[in-house]
Amino acid sequence: ARTRRPLIAGNWKMNGLKADALALASGIADGVRQTGWTDREVLICPPATLVMAVAEAVKGSGVLVGGQNCHAKPSGAHTGDIAAEMLRDCGAACVIVGHSERRTDCGETDADVRAKAEAACRAGLLPIVCIGETLAEQEAGMTFSVLANQLKGSVPAGATAAKLVVAYEPVWAIGTGKTPTIAEVAAAHAHIRKVLDGLMPDAAGVRLLYGGSVKASNAAELLAAGDVDGALVGGASLKVDEFLAIAKAV
Ligand code: PEP
Image (tube, rainbow, N blue to C red; front, side):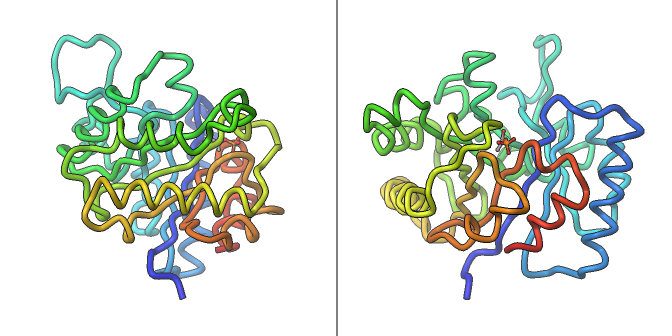
């Protein structure tokens, strides 16, 4: 039996105009409502423009809503940015921080990611801290050291299991259709938990998500891998049936 409640999270990235996004959110909410699941959590992370409307659309279904990024500060002169408090105010419960696309596109460092994760906790949001090695790092045999360094640099000060989710997303597996082997996923997750054990008091309770080309057809085996407590899903989270099938595969 699982000791940690699985979390299936959908990252919509920069996809979704109002009509389609609300149809997607409502479809997912209907599916989750029908199952009556209490043994797993389902989270959707729409673009910031739609967090409020999506939160309204899924109300009462049990589906959680999250942001894809936040600023470290609660307010101030940061044109175009969004505070964790603002996401919370719109109905978000979670926020993804340090996604590899933000590390690459926006130059986010581990220190930035830690500051954002701390902001999330300050605002009452659950941070999902993303880590993962690039293809070059993997080929150089550096996967474990990269993951350890990212964790040491980005896990918030005073982190506890109730206030932290970690997503392991090999950069080369994101949006590529490629995935590590089940043994590689299990080994990476065991390593992550061991590193977390040196950083916090209750690492055994932290949920570790796998992300990178998760789809309905591979979800069951990935979710059954050791130390995998859920999935962070990109492309496959944009279709109601596919995303619900992944959530069912737990
Ligand atoms: C992601 O970007 O978080 C992700 C896992 O994307 P995909 O599922 O499309 O590989």
